[in-house]
Image 1: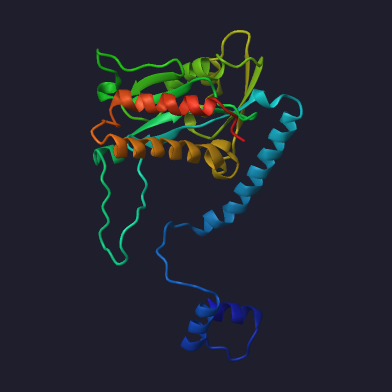
Image 2 (image 1 turned 120 degrees about the vertical axis):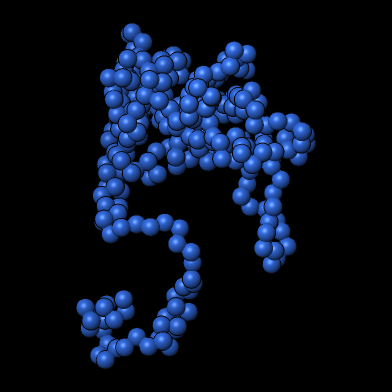
Length: 277
């Protein structure tokens, strides 16, 4: 690379990029050998600027709309997958130790997830109901039922991923039901289930209005409030609950269906009690 740059710009005549020069360059720049965490193509690198430009344009569009309507009319909606047992990936151990172990209640609970779909409003408040999708055998709950709470809307599925047919009831029960605004403006990502606006509008009650603003593909990490801010806090809160439970009462089954819902209702109640600024 150094030779190519020098040939292109002609900085030094007869430059050969010797081993000594390379080692000095690496040392002066503070470079170290690091494991590659992701692979990208040149196309990805070129499109990065396009994504950033699209994100900035979307933010400008939303701000223009906010000048016309109150912040309480704007909400961001997205899915968040959470493992049945949330634990920290780091701990303290003696220097030089090759194997570091952490006690969990179930190894399987670290790879099995459920999904929550919160509604975060631009005025900093959280929606009155938290939509929860639990994976169940054959996609339905047992005859014994499940633990319920007034601030939860719980559905079952063959996986924890939200289905397209679950979108209308989500909007009717969790987005449009509690809002006092005649118009709700939802900021949604490019997930296929949110692209079908007719399907979404079928869950809007009569006399209410819903406007959908779609976040540009690939830009959610840049301008989606739930991704940028809230999900990190929510997972940290749940991890704190799980950690305290294992410490105080190791025999308590934190990853069971009912206890998962109890953690969900406690988390939702805590965040609806104050504004998220």
